[in-house]
Length: 146
Image 1: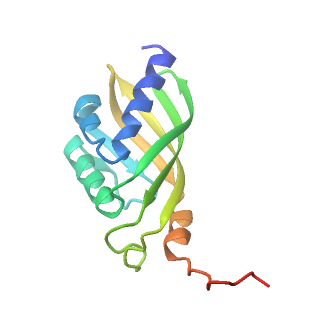
Image 2: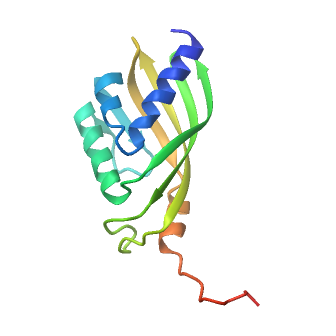
């Protein structure tokens, strides 16, 4: 596949992280895909395991939408810099109940492709930014900061 075809595949596969996008995994992932993010305790092996992670993520953020901001392709790899937006509507994160807050979180993912399918997804998420947004105390009404 060309670099542009690989970028298009990665851009499309990234949408698995948007609410309602899990069907992309069935279509574009190798059944034995490996998915690994630095904030996870261990890699997830297999498309079904990845879909379970997505289901858990959407339980917290049912309106999550992800957008590719930059893509770079070389050989069988595509690097995607992305940003997602979502509202923390359900579940406890970082020891805090659902805040209802809208968050924006950045990250980067490297996809390895083979035969028109994704065989690896490895990335990093700005979990610290997410933590700050979820746990920040609301400022008192009328506080002008001075």
